[in-house]
Length: 535
Ligand code: BG6
Image (cartoon, rainbow, N blue to C red; front, side, top):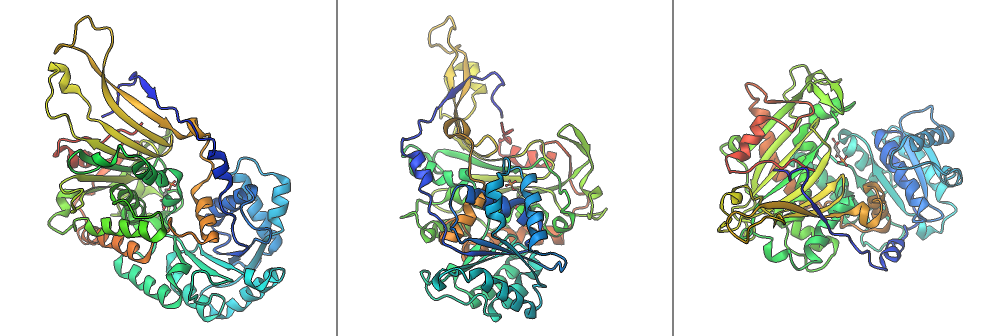
């Protein structure tokens, strides 16, 4: 249900507190360290990590002696060619608006390259040598190392072993030990519960949990962090945030893009591994969790784990009635004709991998008993949007005659992206009707809307900037703990296993540029609910 296009908008203009600017400037500065990027020439490094580093430098948040060592198998690369590739990446990045020459010179001097086959233990001696050259200028206690695994998951295990056996990354006993060594592991963390547990065992056998940072970049988004602030820095929501007042919750993460050049990866992953196991379940846990006693990494993560553990298990009997999968076919996206999933590069012509899924989940605890959480995500949908919509119950008795039938239930929408913000809709009396308050008055929905950009200017920190800075500071709240990642797999594993062992007779489809398959609408229509069309 969407508001009529001409519905008036009541703007809740935020009045930034005088200290807001000061608080932004007070973001902690990173410890001196060398960021070693395994997969230094890869897509993630070029598209996300380098732009994030550039921005951090621009904001004076990295140390004077910060350096980056890119590692990749390519033997023909040198420091100079690596720098040239990174310069090009910065100019192409839409997260950097114009490269400042002086700043680039300062960054360029800190970029180094080392060629190594990361699955070969002998090659780690070269990495060690280059690290020592870079670290020479620093005091011994400032020779901190941050290893970033921006590589395919198939090589995580040998790399983790080699890092440890080469002595480049010793296990630390205490979180405040100096110099520190930290390891960032990109998603996907495993491809099912079993492999995630194996990877956790390996990591925690060789390193301490406080050295291990499992990334889910959604947690670095300002608006995702705002979920907790909205819920727990305001007192008006808490009394309503439960089964007595919430009718259902819808979580949508839709993308306009298709699989692009990631067909190979996507054929192995599919939408459930790619988006549900991590991003959507993170949004769900932040929305549903109890208030933590303190805002510390472990207190927040404890509460999120409790939510994940309370999600009702899906079984072979319940999955068919509560989950829908589908694949996109040819259609129109952004005004252009686009191909279907099975015609994409590196995708099998008879692929059974879903590019869309919609799932109804229940959280079996006191707060949420009986409240459906509808989750959906897909590629090549009508619009790129991520949002959480909390729909409140309808009034218990409606006395406004026929107009009552069209009343929209109050819905609080947290817009994660784009148009970051929060809105709440409610019904008002349309002024000017010639009658007094009788059963014939006209009623219309309006939105009370908070828009981040309008209130605070552009959202300045892209997710990777926040997350990289946090690792360099040693702040783990926005990273996934080992038990959390396993609890999320436990929720998702039965669905993946069921779908992989029960290929559909006919895979449901949706045209590129639409809002998904008919089956997804039917899934929630049986509860008398419709998917929101995000604004
Ligand atoms: C990644 C997925 O984790 O998230 C991609 O692997 C997806 O398939 C991306 O496109 C979406 O992230 P964002 O920040 O663009 O919403």
